[in-house]
Image (cartoon, rainbow over all chains, first blue to last red):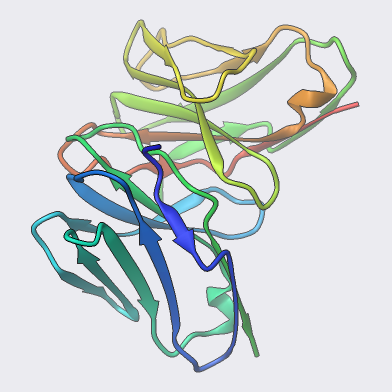
Length: 111
Length: 113
């Protein structure tokens, strides 16, 4: 399967805590992307990490990539209730190719 | 803000009706995609297009059809809707460059009675 597999499937935390979501994939990638989906809406691109990068930051988001373990993690620091959403990883196996999404991690941040 | 639009946002129809879900983007992207998603579930790629007059079926078999006559427009059609077609349909586009970042529309939620 070409999709990434997110873990955990669901995560519930308090506002202010950090949230960590993991993604595993099967074969060598070109890049790996993370997306967010609010309930009933379309997906929004959050961050992309290339296969030759190990860590990337964007605001309160930190993404790591371990190509030897074929895994990535998304860390959201100092979470807010507005971060409540589903988060999907999408490994990209070739340049500009189609993306296959997994089931995502459903994050709930309680005020 | 992504310039990709889907209409209708919500549609409730009876079995046997023909429906077309519209998707348009103003970014000049060559690549466009249709995904199907049931609530709380993964997205399934059902159709994609890499340019005008190019369409391919995705990883999930679908009874829907698509066309790509203009770069900006990628409609999806169901000739005879059934309750099993009830789902959310998400359209996306990308510029086909190195990153392959997708821009999504807000989705069309279809309910077939």
